[in-house]
Every structure is written in C-alpha cells, then in structure tokens.
Image (cartoon, rainbow, N blue to C red; front, side, top):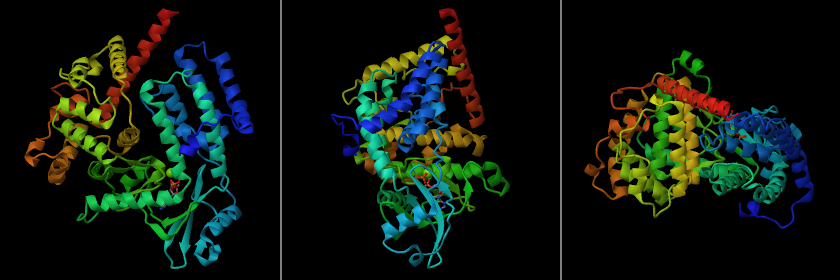
Length: 497
Ligand SMILES: Nc1ncnc2c1ncn2[C@@H]1O[C@H](COP(=O)(O)OP(=O)(O)O)[C@@H](O)[C@H]1O
Ligand SMILES: [Mg+2]
C-alpha cells in the first residue's frame, strides 16, 4: 500500500497525459456549460462528466468512483447519486487468457484439476471474472480469475493519482468530514487486497471463523461463507465452493417461493453485528452483487476483497457505543465516539453535549420548515468540523454497509417496525452475549442496564408519543425532509438572483 501511494518527484508522463486528456475536457466542458447554472446544476454537470471520464479511464478510477458513491451525507448528493451509476461491466477476457492465467498460477494444465470449466463467465468486472467449474472430485466450484494486465495498470494509475491528488486538494470542494487521507488509504488498501486473492481467501476464513464462534450451537447460521479450496488459491486464481441462491434484489421471487424476506434480512443483520461487536471483523462491501439468499433462508456472503476490521481498542469503543445507545446514555456515547477516533481524544464531552443539545428532547425534523432544517444542518456540521470530527476508516465501511441494509429494507422488510426491531436486536445482544460483553467492558453484567426505547426513538428523530414506525413511514419522512430542503434551496437561489 505504501508503495502504491508513494508520491514520485516526476509523474509517469505518458500515463499522466492520458489522464489529463480524458479529465481535462470533462472539467473544461463543465466550466463552460454547467458552472453558472446554479449550485445544483453545476455540481450535477461536473459529477456526470467526471463519472463518464472515470468509466473511460478504467478499473482504478471505477473503483474510486464506487468508493465515492458510498459517501452519502459526506459528499455532495449529486456526486454520490451520479457515481452510483458507475458501471463496472467490462468485456470478459477470452477463455484462452483465462486458461493461461489459471495454468500459470496453479502450475498444471486445466484438465488435470477440473472435470469441466464453463468458458462463459458468470460475471465479469474490472478486476476479475468468475467462472463456474467442477473439480475432478465432482465438487461444484467457482473460479475467480484476475485479469492479467490489471496489476500493472493499477500501479500505473496510482502513480498518476498520487502525483495529481496534491494538486487537486483545496481546489475541489469536499466536506472535510470526508477525511480524504483515510479515503485514499482505504482506497489503496482495498485495491491492494483485491489484487491478491490469497488475502481474499484469508478474509473468507477469518469471517467464517468469527461466524462459527459467535453462534457455535446454532443449528442454522444466518450467514454462510463459501469455503475457499485449501490448495487451489494463488495471487490471481481463487477456487471456492459454489453456492446457489436467489439474487439479493429479487424480493418478489423469494417471497413467492415462501421465503420470509424480513426474517432473512434481520437474522443476517444480527449475525453481522455479532461478528462486529464480539470480534471486530465484518464483511466490508455489502451490496446486492455480493449476496445471495439460499433457498433455506441463509444469506451467502461473497466477495471478500474488502473486509472491515476494528482493532481491540476500536472494537471495545464500538461495543461501548452500542451499549450506551441501547441504554440512552448520551455521555457514554459521545465518549465512545472519542475512543473510536471520530472525535479528538481530548474533547470536552460536556461541551459537545451542550453544543449539539444532546441532552434536550429531540425536535422532530419533519416539523421544521426549510430554513430551520438548513440552519440545523449547518450548525451541526459547523460544530463537528470545529471539534475536528473525522470518520475513521472502519466506521466508514460500517456506515456504508448500514446504508445498504437500510436500502434493502425497502423491498425486503417495508412493514417492519424499525423501533421494535432495533429494540429486539439490542436486547438480543444483551441477553445472548451479556456475560461476555460485560467482561469485555470490565463491568458487572447487571450494570449493562435494560434497553430503552426512548433513546432509539430519539435517534430516529421522533418525539415521545410515537410508538411504532415502519420502514415505509421512515422513508416517507426522509422524502418529506429532502423535498423541503430542495425547495428551500431553490427559493433561496430565486431570491439571490
Ligand atoms: N462462491 C460463489 N458461488 C456462486 N456464485 C458466486 C460465488 N462467488 C462469486 N459468485 C458470482 O460471481 C459474481 C462476482 O463475484 P465477486 O466475488 O463479487 O467478484 P468481484 O470482486 O468482481 O465483484 C457474484 O456476484 C456472484 O454472482
Ligand atoms: Mg463483487
């Protein structure tokens, strides 16, 4: 990683010229056409041109685009929604190339390992493609094969980026909360891990191990991980157990087949959180392409290129944060944010509580008008920036995963009461793992305290009377707030002009 992000004195000239040739016109056209059309149009135009340029520049930039697209609430909304469209569908490598890579890496002819090998891949993305195959033993497997040129290409792209990035810093408006250094580190680490499938196989084993240890007696675990083949793993080739299931996005088909999708989603979420709070390890790249729902309702996790890890200190801080949220202990929550590295270590907890009015009853944001909303957001952002708040890397992955789960609820569990569900998950953690958690935190199990609905309610911005809130209702609230903000934005532009 260090090598990837090292800044050289001289740019790799040819490669840099290519980047400038593609990015230059994109930015230039934006400058001429969209820039003066108001903030939203300007950002929208730049985002679109950048997205198309990134797609042309290839895998490294596509990957960067995907990371940016996960930055909801951190980067401008126009950029985030545009980069969600970043297509990662590249024509597949020819079968001859695939054969050559597999044979080179495994050191044997294809036929001496596989009884059959599908020439057409199941999926082809920018870094690798995946083929279904069968071992001589008859076992069904998939073979993930890396593109042969990708390693060289990524190194070259990074060399250019490392040289260009310092020139761009300060010229492109990005919220400081985004923590650019952590983003670049995350990016380099991500892509570095994805270029070595031995690391991916190790991640798979780690996550599987954590799942086995969290629910050792459970007859049916909620999450499954395909088993990597013990000997058929190399830098560019990863042979693993093939799993079958429904595509994640296809809730209607699952429901028609009698699968309780709300139940599936919640069980998977609990298993995910258990792995995180008890062991600090989690799948760091949840999205529809990386998940399958098995016919028995278990969720198969695929693609361990990005795995979230909290060190012991971070894990304990996270555990404290969750437990403090459960018991509605605001002080402890702010302190835990500090320990997590999201706030500076010497932060004055009482001041934060007073500034952000965390000790006061929440005001339901749907009762505010556009101006109040805008002011509220501005004030909170200003305070957070003032403290030097930062999103630590692991937290970034976690938030991204939770945004995905939240989106999945819309189709898989729209009528689930999110308040009751959050309550149930927190109670589950306390009752099932209370002894361990108390031991970790160095307290008496009885001191964990009961889960409080009041805290959950206020974290959703609801006032006291509300007893339940379905995900559908939650979405309607968000739509209302977003519309009001946009309206406010527009009328402000109107008066400015
Ligand atoms: N173990 C597996 N069993 C069945 N299908 C798989 C398995 N692993 C990957 N796939 C299929 O291949 C696709 C791409 O695999 P993935 O590991 O996500 O690659 P990438 O890193 O290119 O996204 C997945 O979306 C899934 O459809
Ligand atoms: Mg994938």
